[in-house]
Length: 608
Image (cartoon, rainbow, N blue to C red; front, side, top):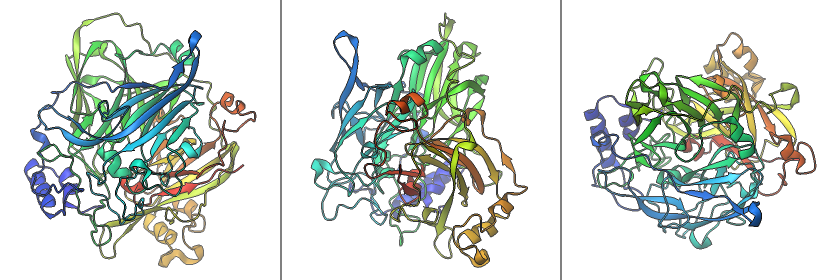
């Protein structure tokens, strides 16, 4: 793992030593972005008093229109990317950020929550108003968007969890700069259409420009998106309304003392990548754009749609005072039945839809906290410190609560059936290091670069078994665009070094060759290996899954609508309501943004 000083400082125990390492890292850095921040000291985030700012609600944009007579019609939105200022904490100077909004004056971090209606299209024209130069380090040695000698910041918005044609999917090479001065090879239009012909659930939108996703999201380009279906959801009786049904967007950041965002500008292998680091970790935990905020709550149920929008940080969340979560959804799909937990692990880009009942609190304050190591899972036996995320200030008076959590949620969704699988694929995760060091230089899927020819060509209307083989020491959250999947099992590999050596074509590869799981004896290496239980709240249909180090996760990946009524709207069973073969195609990737930006992403072309 990375030996970079700033990354070590984020995990080292002892505030004084950590601060010293961060200051040394800043002194060695060659400047922050284009702003020349050298000499401005780093902020000791521990000096910021917690629970000073109230949790904000982000602005809401309605993704549908209402015609005469009350009929819903397609929504028309214009959402811009703006260079603006944002206040992350009462005692921290305002921070320069890039933010989504309907205007520069209303742009926020995270951006506005877009609320769409199932079956009613939302059309968004994305506009780039960003400056000529980035506010964070842009490592141009990566396989990134190329603007040549031109100025401008490439951006493209992806609706994560959305079921849309690839021309509206935010392909990483469909980027554009301000005024369309430069565009990527797959750019066609900034006007995207989201059909919303999918089941109700939680999505999010974020930048997806090749090689710049990590810095563009870190700068603030992210926001929540909901697909609502009142006819199906209202009868459930879950907490509803703006006060009791809230999006909670979590991420981590580092700052300089003047409020500027800090990202180490010196790479762990600077002679290979001058600025790229394997993972970014900040020391301040941000919820809805505020560092360690508080929320006043009544003694009743609340629904929280919790998104981990961090670059690389995992959150293992729990509540003080013995309160529990009740999970009602995972990623973009409701669960069939509610699942209670005392805590859960949330990877970057994962969404947990939970209900918390504060009526049972024995205290007037409840802390949401995390104890996940960074990087995750850390060294064997490593125990991470527990850190606060935010505080709930609980009212003293019990009150009538009309909400409930029903015993059954959305049971009509199809159950995973391995007999549907028409193909079994092996997807291997690799990390490559510089000779003689333990420092990563890049990460690949199936030993191939992002720009190598397409090898995954699923057929529309089918399902496939993907055996995802993690040959690294990191936990990688795998995300597949367009599709949903069910996790069937996850098993540990035995003699993993031997298996990895064969997969990489090393000395013990024999006749197996490179990246051939069966020839390298994957079944033999799985025999007798530990079986890892898939958490109950993650056994439904998902679009992100945490693949443990040295394991094989078996996924049933569905390349057809989850709900047949959506499919039949296209006139043919098993088909999406648009041409999935048109446009640049889709991708799958690790959602640790620093990995994704350094080629842990592969193209995928759907065929008919």
